[in-house]
Amino acid sequence: MANMKQIAKTAGVSLGSVSHVLNGSVSVSDALRKRVMDAVEAVGYQPSQLARGLRRDKTNMIGMIIPDISNPFFPAVVRGAEDVAFAAGYRLILCNTDNSHEKELVHLNELRTYLPAGLIVIPSSFSDLTTQARSYKQAGTSVVCVDRLPRDWEGNSVTVAHEEGACVATNHLIRIGHRQLAVIAGPLHLTNAQERLAGFKRSLKQSKIAISAEYIQESTFDRQAGYAKSLVLLRLVPRPTAIFASNDLIALGVLQAAHELGLRCPEDLSVIGFDNLELGEYTNPSLTTVHQPGYQLGARAADILLAQVSGRQQSVQHVVLKTDLILRGSVGPPSEKKKISRPARAILMS
Ligand code: RIB
Image (cartoon, rainbow, N blue to C red; front, side, top):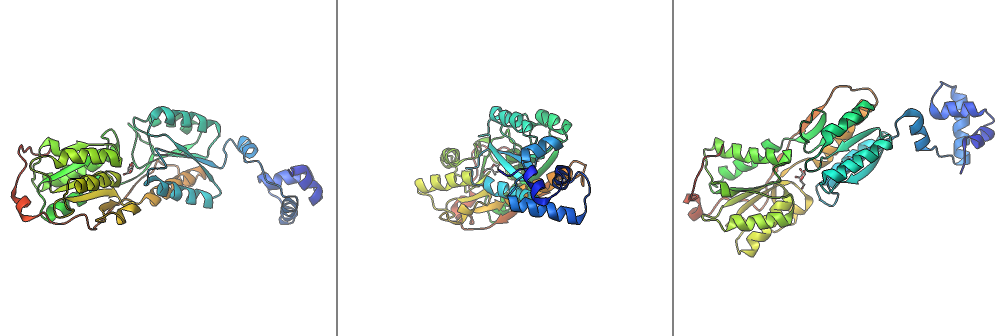
């Protein structure tokens, strides 16, 4: 492997000059820079990022910690972050937590020893990121939280308007005549799931619609749990005419359960998801959903990090991106018969 001595020999300059050019430590003439860079190319030299990182106390690496890359929502977030990082000369290292705060802690402790330029984190369930981020901050390393926030988080964040998105979706169901509404919320220890449920409730409250507690089911963010909770909802009397699902995977479970129970969608049951995964275009019927801009979530997080790494930006940043309701085949007005019936035990939503 080529080294700096060979560069110096090929360029006919001192080792010190090579070091000045490669490390940018001292300003050098254009002629010297060209001579050294020609020699770098001629000998095929590749600088050690590790050695460079040790000298500067920071590498060009950005750590990205997410729950699970096999969840179809997260690849776009990672891609957005990586594209922005790559264009600026930074490289991304990806870690999955499987939503376990213990595994997240292992990643946080290990990544620290790699001297990353920054961290982008989608927190795990019961994340301890708030405490951990303090030591990163002391080392001058920025951390940006994406999608949902750990307890007491006051650092950088990029999220979407979860509550507003859910409220707009529920308003649409009400506008086209639904009164027997149900929701399958995500895990309610996660801020995004809490906010989406708050948006659903806000919409009902604004329209003075009361539903009883069993029409609100909590689930994990996956199809299987969505399916199981749908069976509970679809056996209630009266049966809901519309279900708002806290993400698209849950909504897929609703479609599956409805199909198995012989219910037509949207004639017997309307379904709205949240995320706008590409697969929602190919379900039968196609899935109405709340679009959240996954790619932009990652890209904006990387933008914030890079601005802080370069010193262009010092203050803590909170970015909230907007959502859009995407209307497709899974939503329609309720049939006349259903429109007039009411839930058995009605309570007003708080
Ligand atoms: O599908 C994964 C869900 O969890 C998404 O809605 C996203 O917001 C994530 O937190």
